[in-house]
Length: 487
Ligand code: URP
Ligand code: ZN
Ligand code: ZN
Ligand code: ZN
Figure 1 (cartoon, rainbow, N blue to C red):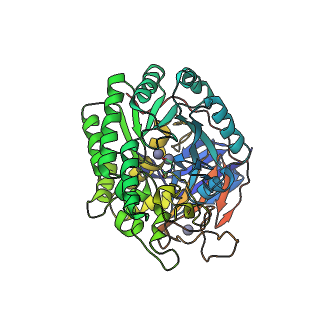
Figure 2: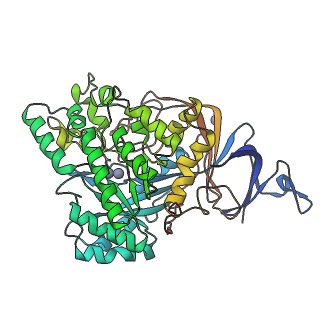
Figure 3: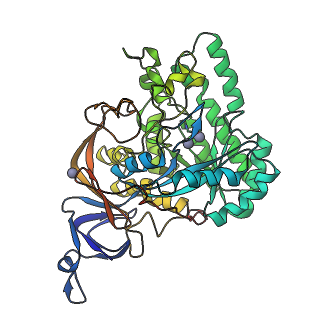
């Protein structure tokens, strides 16, 4: 088994930082040593196979993106990143684990949806991966099957209060699924938006000729998110189920979560980089020479980008500091403009929903450290340690300690990363490129203080010095345990 020493860096955890060397034997971290340590009388650096010099840099546990949608079928098309392209892009950006959503829809069997997701992912991933299960059709059969997910290493499921006719569950269905959550320890994840009301508002807007992407954000008003978040919290509380609200974007929804947490309830929430940085006015309302006012389609996602004038973005950052929100995932769900987002030309309801960010989450969240919004330790906690604890991976993932997988990122605080265009559909060069399979970047023009230098996945260097050194199939399926975050 090959041995590696990551030497001379500052090892950062959720609880502190120290100058230390990290020793990896094969796939596993075996020691965190005082700098220049001898071990059993021998100089460690002289006796390992590989030494990685991390002087002047941070050594952090690999990022865990707990909310991704590779190949998600949506709006008559599928998310453009495959497990191969999406996990490779993740690796480039310092993320070494994803948790993707296996999909079940109404009238189909949960086990068939899950088997399909295993088929899509197996042998294709650059990094380790687990699954949550979307339950898009709650009935007696799916309810009866849900407890068996735990044996499959799937300890969380997602319900949708949005998207009637697609993934939607009504309150009666939500309540019954939450009863299973209470009885089994499966964590309920909720897409909290009032879908039926949104669909009426959206139809009325289109009938009034308000059909551009901007009106996606108007139809999906913050009241629709606040109301559904409140309802989800109350349904969870009446059943005794733990609740995790995904992609929180409205400050009023955060207030609902905070109020429930203040009562001591097992209620949690994530936000995503797009809700920290981007806005209704600047992005959904954008226009360009190429696309006119359809430019905003690049940022159509749900929940939608919120008004900066209303202060949602600042509130999300604050909630990350106060732990009213516990973690940051991307909700990575990319679609190209050509042939995909384009489906919604003239009618925003037909734009496939989603933004691609998997490659940029670690960098974008590091800017919170640079600007003094969060500490270095909180950066690690939000992007790696809490995702591991929340979703039953801690110990193996989310921490640099003996016994953990050798998933480590060497991050250069003095480096620089320019985010630019993706590959065009015809494959033509687009200048500085990201690695996600999309024909634009939702983050084009972002200049990042910091740089992912080296990425190790279970002890193997997969990214180093601007080169991808891994291969398709390096990543393994992770059987997760129950959440380690609940009291
Ligand atoms: O717009 C989004 N978020 N697309 C992915 C599906 C979901 O609701 O998470
Ligand atoms: Zn969702
Ligand atoms: Zn999602
Ligand atoms: Zn660098």
